[in-house]
Amino acid sequence: MRQKKIHIALFILGMAGASEAQTLEKNDIKPQFHAKYAGLRIENPLLTDPGDSGKNVVWDFTNWQTNTGKGYLYTLLTPDECPIKTTGTAWVLQTYPMDDSLSITYDFYAETADSYYRIKEYTDLWTINYPTPEKVYLFPLQYGKTNASSSSYRFNMDNQTWDYSAKSSLVIDGMGLLKTQYGNFDNILRIKYSSEDWATGGTDTGHSVKYIWYKAGTAHPLAEYSIYTDPKGTVIRFGVIYVEMNTLFAKHDENPQIKFYPNPASTKLHFECENLISKYCIKDIRGKIIQAEIQLSDRSLNLDVSQLESGMYLLEYATTGKEKAVPFVVAR
Image (cartoon, rainbow, N blue to C red):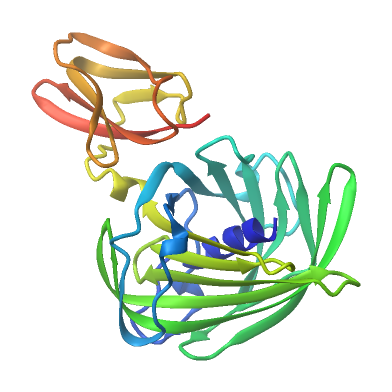
Protein backbone atom coordinates (compact mmCIF):
# COMPACT_ATOMS: atom_id res chain seq x y z
CA MET A 1 0.00 0.00 0.00
CA ARG A 2 2.80 2.43 0.90
CA GLN A 3 4.57 1.63 -2.38
CA LYS A 4 1.47 2.47 -4.44
CA LYS A 5 0.80 5.63 -2.41
CA ILE A 6 4.24 7.02 -3.20
CA HIS A 7 4.02 5.89 -6.84
CA ILE A 8 0.81 7.86 -7.42
CA ALA A 9 1.86 10.90 -5.36
CA LEU A 10 5.02 11.57 -7.36
CA PHE A 11 3.32 11.16 -10.72
CA ILE A 12 1.82 14.60 -10.30
CA LEU A 13 5.25 16.20 -9.98
CA GLY A 14 6.15 15.69 -13.62
CA MET A 15 2.79 16.53 -15.19
CA ALA A 16 4.21 19.57 -17.00
CA GLY A 17 7.56 21.01 -18.06
CA ALA A 18 10.32 22.75 -16.15
CA SER A 19 12.63 25.49 -17.36
CA GLU A 20 16.23 24.72 -18.30
CA ALA A 21 17.35 26.80 -15.28
CA GLN A 22 18.06 25.19 -11.93
CA THR A 23 14.90 26.63 -10.35
CA LEU A 24 11.35 25.41 -10.92
CA GLU A 25 8.40 27.72 -10.42
CA LYS A 26 4.90 26.51 -9.70
CA ASN A 27 3.66 27.01 -13.25
CA ASP A 28 6.57 24.97 -14.63
CA ILE A 29 4.99 21.74 -13.39
CA LYS A 30 1.30 22.61 -13.08
CA PRO A 31 -0.87 19.74 -14.40
CA GLN A 32 -2.86 19.97 -17.63
CA PHE A 33 -6.50 18.94 -17.52
CA HIS A 34 -7.56 16.05 -19.80
CA ALA A 35 -3.96 15.10 -20.56
CA LYS A 36 -3.60 11.34 -21.09
CA TYR A 37 -0.44 9.41 -20.28
CA ALA A 38 0.73 5.84 -20.07
CA GLY A 39 3.08 4.54 -17.41
CA LEU A 40 4.71 1.32 -18.66
CA ARG A 41 6.36 -0.82 -16.00
CA ILE A 42 9.84 -2.08 -16.83
CA GLU A 43 10.82 -5.74 -16.85
CA ASN A 44 13.44 -7.03 -14.39
CA PRO A 45 13.85 -3.86 -12.25
CA LEU A 46 16.35 -5.73 -10.06
CA LEU A 47 18.79 -5.58 -12.97
CA THR A 48 18.57 -1.78 -13.28
CA ASP A 49 19.50 1.25 -11.16
CA PRO A 50 18.70 5.00 -11.16
CA GLY A 51 22.17 6.18 -12.16
CA ASP A 52 24.17 9.10 -10.78
CA SER A 53 23.30 12.51 -9.38
CA GLY A 54 24.97 15.80 -10.29
CA LYS A 55 25.25 17.94 -13.42
CA ASN A 56 25.94 16.84 -17.02
CA VAL A 57 24.86 13.28 -16.22
CA VAL A 58 23.95 10.77 -18.95
CA TRP A 59 21.20 8.39 -17.81
CA ASP A 60 21.16 5.59 -20.38
CA PHE A 61 17.98 3.53 -19.87
CA THR A 62 17.70 2.13 -23.38
CA ASN A 63 17.91 -1.36 -21.85
CA TRP A 64 14.78 -0.75 -19.76
CA GLN A 65 12.34 -3.05 -21.54
CA THR A 66 8.67 -2.27 -20.95
CA ASN A 67 5.59 -4.51 -20.97
CA THR A 68 2.54 -2.94 -22.65
CA GLY A 69 0.21 -5.05 -20.51
CA LYS A 70 1.68 -3.89 -17.21
CA GLY A 71 1.25 -0.31 -16.15
CA TYR A 72 -1.27 2.47 -15.80
CA LEU A 73 -3.20 5.02 -17.86
CA TYR A 74 -3.48 8.49 -16.33
CA THR A 75 -5.98 11.29 -16.99
CA LEU A 76 -6.26 14.68 -15.26
CA LEU A 77 -9.89 15.49 -14.39
CA THR A 78 -11.61 18.58 -13.08
CA PRO A 79 -13.44 18.09 -9.76
CA ASP A 80 -16.80 18.22 -11.56
CA GLU A 81 -15.77 15.41 -13.93
CA CYS A 82 -14.87 13.01 -11.14
CA PRO A 83 -17.69 10.71 -9.94
CA ILE A 84 -16.37 11.01 -6.36
CA LYS A 85 -16.56 14.43 -4.70
CA THR A 86 -14.15 15.80 -2.10
CA THR A 87 -14.24 19.32 -0.69
CA GLY A 88 -11.20 21.48 -1.44
CA THR A 89 -10.14 19.60 -4.58
CA ALA A 90 -8.32 21.53 -7.33
CA TRP A 91 -7.87 18.55 -9.67
CA VAL A 92 -8.17 14.75 -9.71
CA LEU A 93 -5.68 12.23 -11.08
CA GLN A 94 -7.51 9.18 -12.45
CA THR A 95 -5.36 6.05 -12.65
CA TYR A 96 -6.60 3.16 -14.79
CA PRO A 97 -4.67 -0.14 -14.45
CA MET A 98 -3.91 -1.99 -17.70
CA ASP A 99 -4.61 -5.31 -16.04
CA ASP A 100 -7.17 -6.30 -13.43
CA SER A 101 -4.78 -6.36 -10.47
CA LEU A 102 -6.04 -3.05 -9.07
CA SER A 103 -9.13 -0.88 -9.18
CA ILE A 104 -9.40 2.53 -10.81
CA THR A 105 -7.88 5.07 -8.42
CA TYR A 106 -8.82 8.71 -7.91
CA ASP A 107 -6.26 10.97 -6.24
CA PHE A 108 -7.53 14.35 -5.08
CA TYR A 109 -5.14 17.31 -4.96
CA ALA A 110 -5.47 20.75 -3.38
CA GLU A 111 -3.50 23.86 -4.29
CA THR A 112 -2.18 26.93 -2.49
CA ALA A 113 -0.22 29.92 -3.77
CA ASP A 114 3.11 28.10 -3.41
CA SER A 115 2.34 24.36 -3.26
CA TYR A 116 0.35 21.32 -4.39
CA TYR A 117 -0.59 18.50 -2.06
CA ARG A 118 -2.79 15.42 -2.00
CA ILE A 119 -5.78 15.27 0.32
CA LYS A 120 -7.42 11.92 -0.52
CA GLU A 121 -7.03 8.67 -2.45
CA TYR A 122 -10.12 6.65 -3.34
CA THR A 123 -10.76 3.23 -4.86
CA ASP A 124 -13.63 0.78 -4.44
CA LEU A 125 -11.29 -1.28 -2.22
CA TRP A 126 -9.79 1.34 0.09
CA THR A 127 -9.65 5.02 0.96
CA ILE A 128 -6.72 7.08 2.23
CA ASN A 129 -7.31 10.47 3.82
CA TYR A 130 -4.57 12.94 4.77
CA PRO A 131 -5.41 14.86 7.98
CA THR A 132 -1.94 16.43 7.77
CA PRO A 133 -1.02 16.61 4.06
CA GLU A 134 2.50 16.13 2.78
CA LYS A 135 3.88 19.44 1.48
CA VAL A 136 7.22 18.90 -0.21
CA TYR A 137 6.19 20.61 -3.45
CA LEU A 138 7.03 24.07 -2.09
CA PHE A 139 7.91 26.54 -4.82
CA PRO A 140 10.29 27.59 -6.11
CA LEU A 141 12.16 24.27 -6.21
CA GLN A 142 15.91 24.78 -6.54
CA TYR A 143 18.72 22.47 -7.59
CA GLY A 144 20.39 21.15 -4.46
CA LYS A 145 17.86 22.69 -2.05
CA THR A 146 15.82 20.18 -0.02
CA ASN A 147 12.16 20.63 0.94
CA ALA A 148 11.04 18.55 3.93
CA SER A 149 7.63 17.75 5.39
CA SER A 150 5.94 15.79 8.15
CA SER A 151 2.50 14.34 7.45
CA SER A 152 -0.11 11.80 8.51
CA TYR A 153 -2.65 9.64 6.71
CA ARG A 154 -5.49 7.27 7.57
CA PHE A 155 -5.94 4.05 5.60
CA ASN A 156 -9.43 2.48 5.52
CA MET A 157 -10.25 -0.97 4.11
CA ASP A 158 -12.85 -3.61 4.99
CA ASN A 159 -14.25 -1.48 7.80
CA GLN A 160 -10.83 -1.30 9.44
CA THR A 161 -8.68 1.78 9.96
CA TRP A 162 -4.92 2.25 10.34
CA ASP A 163 -3.21 5.55 11.13
CA TYR A 164 0.28 6.37 9.86
CA SER A 165 2.80 9.14 10.34
CA ALA A 166 5.42 10.07 7.74
CA LYS A 167 8.44 12.25 7.02
CA SER A 168 9.54 13.07 3.48
CA SER A 169 11.90 15.25 1.48
CA LEU A 170 12.34 16.32 -2.13
CA VAL A 171 15.31 17.79 -4.01
CA ILE A 172 16.42 18.31 -7.61
CA ASP A 173 19.58 16.21 -7.54
CA GLY A 174 20.51 15.77 -11.21
CA MET A 175 20.68 17.48 -14.60
CA GLY A 176 21.65 15.95 -17.92
CA LEU A 177 20.69 13.68 -20.82
CA LEU A 178 18.13 10.85 -20.60
CA LYS A 179 18.08 7.97 -23.09
CA THR A 180 15.10 5.57 -23.33
CA GLN A 181 13.72 3.24 -25.98
CA TYR A 182 11.41 6.12 -27.00
CA GLY A 183 14.20 8.62 -27.70
CA ASN A 184 16.96 10.81 -26.27
CA PHE A 185 15.98 13.82 -24.15
CA ASP A 186 18.36 16.63 -23.22
CA ASN A 187 18.04 19.32 -20.53
CA ILE A 188 16.53 16.78 -18.13
CA LEU A 189 16.03 17.47 -14.43
CA ARG A 190 15.89 14.57 -11.97
CA ILE A 191 14.03 14.80 -8.68
CA LYS A 192 14.89 12.62 -5.71
CA TYR A 193 12.03 11.97 -3.29
CA SER A 194 12.72 10.21 0.03
CA SER A 195 10.20 9.16 2.67
CA GLU A 196 9.70 7.02 5.72
CA ASP A 197 6.40 6.10 7.34
CA TRP A 198 5.27 4.11 10.33
CA ALA A 199 2.09 3.11 12.12
CA THR A 200 1.19 5.86 14.57
CA GLY A 201 2.39 4.79 18.01
CA GLY A 202 4.63 2.09 16.51
CA THR A 203 8.32 1.84 15.70
CA ASP A 204 8.46 -0.31 12.53
CA THR A 205 9.38 2.01 9.67
CA GLY A 206 9.22 1.63 5.90
CA HIS A 207 11.64 3.61 3.69
CA SER A 208 11.26 4.74 0.09
CA VAL A 209 13.54 6.53 -2.38
CA LYS A 210 12.07 7.59 -5.69
CA TYR A 211 13.75 9.22 -8.70
CA ILE A 212 11.76 10.94 -11.43
CA TRP A 213 13.03 12.48 -14.66
CA TYR A 214 11.26 15.16 -16.69
CA LYS A 215 11.93 17.74 -19.40
CA ALA A 216 10.74 21.30 -19.83
CA GLY A 217 7.80 21.45 -22.22
CA THR A 218 6.90 17.77 -21.83
CA ALA A 219 3.61 17.48 -19.96
CA HIS A 220 4.42 14.19 -18.24
CA PRO A 221 7.34 12.48 -16.47
CA LEU A 222 9.70 10.60 -18.76
CA ALA A 223 10.91 7.91 -16.35
CA GLU A 224 10.93 6.94 -12.70
CA TYR A 225 12.70 4.44 -10.47
CA SER A 226 11.71 3.53 -6.90
CA ILE A 227 13.31 1.53 -4.10
CA TYR A 228 11.10 0.57 -1.16
CA THR A 229 12.34 -1.17 1.99
CA ASP A 230 9.65 -2.56 4.27
CA PRO A 231 9.97 -2.72 8.08
CA LYS A 232 11.33 -6.29 7.85
CA GLY A 233 14.11 -5.23 5.48
CA THR A 234 12.63 -6.64 2.27
CA VAL A 235 13.59 -4.46 -0.71
CA ILE A 236 11.21 -3.88 -3.63
CA ARG A 237 12.33 -2.09 -6.80
CA PHE A 238 10.24 -0.93 -9.73
CA GLY A 239 10.65 1.38 -12.70
CA VAL A 240 8.30 3.09 -15.14
CA ILE A 241 8.67 4.72 -18.54
CA TYR A 242 6.03 7.41 -19.08
CA VAL A 243 4.71 8.07 -22.58
CA GLU A 244 2.05 10.52 -23.72
CA MET A 245 -0.50 8.62 -25.81
CA ASN A 246 -0.10 10.71 -28.97
CA THR A 247 3.69 10.46 -28.68
CA LEU A 248 3.53 6.70 -28.31
CA PHE A 249 1.34 6.46 -31.40
CA ALA A 250 2.85 9.19 -33.58
CA LYS A 251 0.45 8.45 -36.46
CA HIS A 252 -2.63 9.19 -34.36
CA ASP A 253 -5.01 11.33 -36.45
CA GLU A 254 -7.43 13.68 -34.69
CA ASN A 255 -10.32 13.07 -37.07
CA PRO A 256 -13.79 14.18 -35.94
CA GLN A 257 -15.36 12.03 -38.69
CA ILE A 258 -14.60 8.76 -36.91
CA LYS A 259 -15.97 6.99 -33.84
CA PHE A 260 -14.52 4.05 -31.98
CA TYR A 261 -15.65 2.54 -28.71
CA PRO A 262 -15.31 1.31 -26.04
CA ASN A 263 -11.80 2.51 -25.22
CA PRO A 264 -10.44 0.71 -23.23
CA ALA A 265 -11.94 -2.39 -24.83
CA SER A 266 -12.09 -5.90 -23.41
CA THR A 267 -13.65 -8.17 -26.08
CA LYS A 268 -14.98 -6.00 -28.95
CA LEU A 269 -13.92 -2.70 -30.52
CA HIS A 270 -16.44 -0.90 -32.73
CA PHE A 271 -15.08 1.54 -35.34
CA GLU A 272 -17.07 3.86 -37.62
CA CYS A 273 -15.94 6.22 -40.40
CA GLU A 274 -17.80 8.52 -42.81
CA ASN A 275 -15.69 7.25 -45.73
CA LEU A 276 -15.39 3.68 -46.98
CA ILE A 277 -12.66 1.69 -45.25
CA SER A 278 -10.55 -0.30 -47.71
CA LYS A 279 -8.23 -2.07 -45.28
CA TYR A 280 -7.06 -2.11 -41.67
CA CYS A 281 -4.50 -3.64 -39.37
CA ILE A 282 -3.88 -3.71 -35.62
CA LYS A 283 -0.30 -3.26 -34.39
CA ASP A 284 1.27 -3.36 -30.96
CA ILE A 285 3.47 -0.47 -29.82
CA ARG A 286 6.56 -2.14 -31.28
CA GLY A 287 4.95 -2.16 -34.73
CA LYS A 288 4.17 -5.89 -34.95
CA ILE A 289 1.00 -6.63 -36.94
CA ILE A 290 -1.47 -8.52 -34.74
CA GLN A 291 -4.56 -8.57 -36.97
CA ALA A 292 -5.30 -7.35 -40.52
CA GLU A 293 -7.72 -7.38 -43.44
CA ILE A 294 -6.73 -5.86 -46.80
CA GLN A 295 -9.91 -6.12 -48.92
CA LEU A 296 -12.79 -4.16 -47.43
CA SER A 297 -15.50 -1.76 -48.52
CA ASP A 298 -17.39 -0.75 -45.43
CA ARG A 299 -17.92 2.22 -43.13
CA SER A 300 -17.77 0.28 -39.88
CA LEU A 301 -15.71 -2.46 -38.25
CA ASN A 302 -16.57 -4.76 -35.38
CA LEU A 303 -13.20 -6.03 -34.24
CA ASP A 304 -12.67 -9.02 -31.98
CA VAL A 305 -9.93 -8.10 -29.49
CA SER A 306 -10.71 -10.83 -26.98
CA GLN A 307 -7.48 -12.70 -27.80
CA LEU A 308 -5.24 -9.66 -27.39
CA GLU A 309 -3.25 -9.24 -24.21
CA SER A 310 -3.96 -6.21 -22.05
CA GLY A 311 -2.00 -3.24 -23.31
CA MET A 312 -1.88 -0.49 -25.94
CA TYR A 313 -2.40 -0.96 -29.67
CA LEU A 314 -2.71 1.02 -32.89
CA LEU A 315 -5.55 0.62 -35.38
CA GLU A 316 -4.33 1.65 -38.82
CA TYR A 317 -6.93 2.04 -41.58
CA ALA A 318 -7.17 3.34 -45.16
CA THR A 319 -9.94 5.45 -46.73
CA THR A 320 -9.91 7.03 -50.22
CA GLY A 321 -6.21 6.34 -50.58
CA LYS A 322 -5.27 7.89 -47.24
CA GLU A 323 -3.83 5.89 -44.36
CA LYS A 324 -4.61 7.01 -40.83
CA ALA A 325 -4.34 5.58 -37.33
CA VAL A 326 -5.90 5.74 -33.88
CA PRO A 327 -4.59 4.30 -30.59
CA PHE A 328 -6.70 2.12 -28.31
CA VAL A 329 -6.27 0.10 -25.17
CA VAL A 330 -7.23 -3.47 -24.25
CA ALA A 331 -7.87 -3.85 -20.53
CA ARG A 332 -9.47 -6.62 -18.49
